[in-house]
Image (cartoon, rainbow over all chains, first blue to last red; front, top):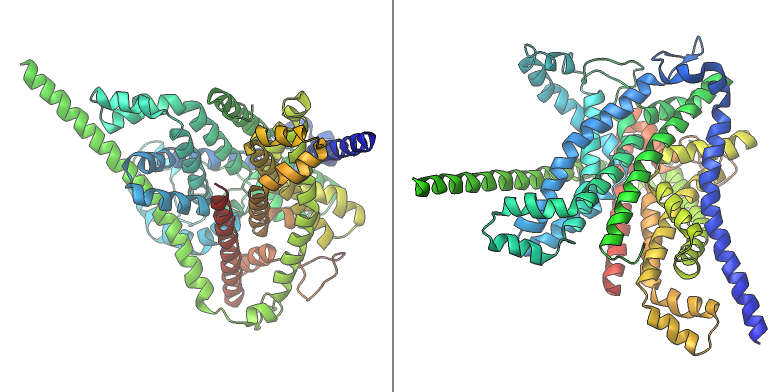
Length: 313
Length: 283
């Protein structure tokens, strides 16, 4: 009897361990598959792949620079917008919002974080881009035409779609994500600390800026990095509105492309081994970039959990 | 003099406080506004021509009448296979992390890798399955699409399972063990049962997550204009149809794309709400 249950124990232990190994196997499989798949392109272009802007399927000359540029710039602008607004929402939810509404708005934001990215894409293409093209875009181009630097960044014509539009859609998409994480971190701040600051006569803003934010900085940064990881790899929301042009233009209003948009648009129609392989190498680059960002995010959030005495060390 | 100065400082502090609080109210307004706008357009365009045809007729060629029946079926079939395959693996791996190797180095690695997979770009999953399945088999297929979705389901279930099992108090485990229950019985009869609502929530969230995933299906399941139940062939699915129809120049295709988008969103929101209610019951 005892031996039998010992055997069953060992078998179940092994079974769960195998499942855990499968998780590692998937990760290893992704890297291996992408690595093997991109070998022809790596052999053909070497390091130049990363520094070449040309993307020409006809002459089979491929470079990742335009796609990488689009990915990095659109995510960067999206973060510039979404981080302050997301933190603002978190401040609103923890300090300003009436208690009765707090839960409701919090739930609404969390639910909206679950809306699939293709919905943001279709909305961006059919609703946002035409309105943006007709109203804000010409106005911005007009206002900034004599301002140095900005006149080049926001140069016409107004297409509606383009890198800047993709950034705006991305920022809306990652916004609920940032505010949900930030709110959760804000709530871990011991209320005695906040009360102490209020008792000293601090205003709400001073409490947020000098007590709550410094206390929760690792969590906020970790959450922002997670959101950045999402933004960098986001495919559908970007593919719809970025314009799919393989070039680097000074103007943010010009059509561009991103790594994920290039793969989504061209992969199923690619002909020739080198074309395929170049697209897969783009995937490998994207995986590399997001891996670094997500790894940093995780390490920061883990450190925070340990400090908070959480169970998952 | 000092009184005037301190009044000035005080006024400045109050002004700054008011300024930033107004900004944060505006941030909340902006967020809620843009998200309301998205839902509004979705219902406005999606409900416009919604009829039962959507569920009974196939995706049409441009200019013809039709529905999304084949795409709805394909999405269901692939999601079902993905959940059926991904849930046991995720459940067991999550159990390993929480019950057997809670503090081991190996678990630290698995946890790290799992959380990377959880947030990794889904288009990468599409490329991976293309390389290991589609390229080998020589054609796109429903199985490949289901495999891609499985890869997305697993990390979600692992993460929620582990979190939920960690919430089960150790006293329960010790009590069961003290009664002489072997470890496998402790897990199956005590901890799994205690964490059941949470684990189901995780599975629901995983379904919500994959029902809108588009990028991993682009080069695995591809699409099929006709009614097909053959998982070995390219299989229609809602996200791909939405993508293809929205990018097309035809108005009636755009209408169907909106209807599909509405269906997906309603499904995802319903799943999230059910998951939330279940979660609420637990606590």
